[in-house]
Length: 333
Ligand SMILES: [Zn+2]
Image (tube, rainbow, N blue to C red):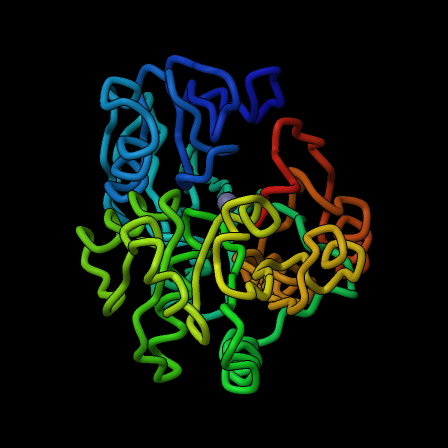
């Protein structure tokens, strides 16, 4: 593997993994924009990731898509086999597994170990080299179960029935996970969404997820908006404080993100209620996962690289930082 200006390059496979510039052959781990750019020649990805890319970009942008179901093997180059394993991050997210000359390298992409009904759970793949992210790699990051955070939200909704709870969520993954978690908690009211969340939520429905009754806020007549008191509205984080939200009755800004454990980030979002909902592995899960893969070498792509490197070395694992650029930390979910 080499770090090139386009991104992480696997020499024997002649392919980049999640390159941030257009390349001839790309392996794309999942649909988030900082991993799935448009304009590549051939794209190896799960069918769900390709659908997400087609929804976000023009159809032509993913013309060279090669759909690989989890565990489906393809000889990507002479003697190099590629297959994808579930990463538990968002719908269709995958780890790229490359087998070559009797040794294996696993590139995890973004991943998490917590439960998420919108995607297949993370699978530990035994490997020689494990390439991992480190977005939340500090001991301070311990992500609570999502049921705990949903409970916090629903208590606030019951306590403040005049307020419209407006939740800032990323359009891909977080939004749909929140919706399903609310249903799992027994919340049966109609959910209301900002227009920017509609397309991807519809795609999740096409791919088999059932979110119950939901409606786009823009479809309500002006006079019906007052009916949103005591209701839950989902919107992109940027809409929490903009003019759009002022049309809602007494909006109470809520932000759902792994960063909500950091007070400064809560203030920055002007959130009155912070839900710690992360789609990344927390500190303990990052270390546990690296150990469970049995890898002798762990390469760290981006995030809190030094802390994880140090913690893994203490456990006898050869760890090194790759210092990949081009990952959008603010948008890391
Ligand atoms: Zn991601």
